[in-house]
Image 1 (cartoon, helix red, strand yellow):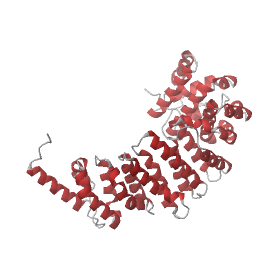
Image 2 (cartoon, rainbow, N blue to C red; image 1 turned 90 degrees about the horizontal axis):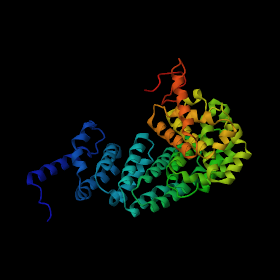
Image 3 (cartoon, rainbow, N blue to C red; image 1 turned 30 degrees about the horizontal axis):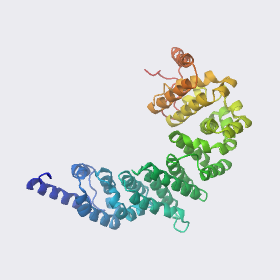
Image 4 (cartoon, rainbow, N blue to C red; image 1 turned 180 degrees about the vertical axis):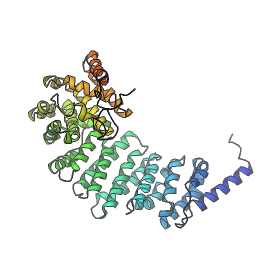
Amino acid sequence: PPPPPPPADIVSARAAAMDAYLRVVFSGDTKVKLPPAVGCVFALLVRTLTHEEFEGKVMPVVVKQLKRSPEAVLRAVRHLLESAPLDLSRYAAQLSEPVLSQTKHADDWRRKEAVGAVAAIAASSSNVDAVRDLFDAIKGELDDPKKRPKEWQARAGLFDALAQMSRAKVSEKAKASLASEACACLAGVCKGEAQKDAKEKLAAALSVWLGFIPGALPVETVEITVAGMKDTKDGFHRSLLRMLTSAIAVNPGLAAGAGKLVTHLAPLAKIGAAKPSQRTEGAMALLIIAAAAADDAAAATAATKEKVWEEALKPDATYFTATNIAKLGADDSEMLARCLGVLMDAHSAHLAKAKATKAAQRAATMLLLHPTPAVRVVARGALDAATEAGTPVQDLLAALRHWLVAAEQPGGWPGLSPNEGEGGDGGEFPR
């Protein structure tokens, strides 16, 4: 039997709360600055909204005020969409136009709030058609040069919004299809994008969607990466390197298509091994090369021909020396740990030939003691990979013991920090 209706006083109280919520929070009066605590007052109401209430009472007010006075209600709309316990698929079409218009606004805070609203819609939408419609609305403005916004801030907002569409709760097959289209779109736009900040946003969005690509790295992505490596004046090549290393970390299968990048990345890997100022770029390049060479014989041959193993894997390379590792930030330390894992797993013979096996093991065990948990997790994975590849556990224990002994001496422990440039000057050994 259906549950009994709630008591009349409960119904009355909820109606009053709903009326107050819509009149106060969504008044649309830009002159009225509501205290932050107002949201907490209505939190329970929002968390228990039904589809009937949302569709019949909330949505008409929200859409109206988004169109009439978006600056007054945008934050409240984002909070509503993030907190409502509903599948928002059925409301995506109504919210699309007013929300997407704000993702292109000149004000940074408006773009961020609107992108957050897009993320909330995507994360709570399971209907493929609704997700596809919102996805196409964003992609359509980027694909068509005539529709593509002239202001870089607007393009940046659309890149962020497209990235957030990856949060949609659709099937793996549907997500893969969206990913292929998103990557092709972003790679195409990248060829004509000249504004530095917009390009950074584009690379970040592309990195997100590459994580859902089935199979190897798309040809279009390889092409824009090659072009970026040839022109390094604006520093965009670093964003491309970070894009690829982040994507490969999430989706290792991409490495199979990165073989054509080896000859373009080899100089960075070799220079970074010798110059501390370029160690981060070099380590990212080395990670991509090592991952590609592990899956592709042609990539392995190219790496050997370019003398990557010979010049980048020297025992005193910046990738292995404690003082250089210690000055890396947490994100770069995590990336280096992943690079060391690939080297010890798939390229132990090259490390041995370069007499850098012990140096790599010590670098990995040093990162196992990093103050940032995420770095320790990746370092542990690197050591597990080395063990599975045949590295004796005794060798890894000896590498770890090296740091225990060093820590007993004044200045023996280099000191690690989550923040870039703060390590390397000694410090307290982790306890």
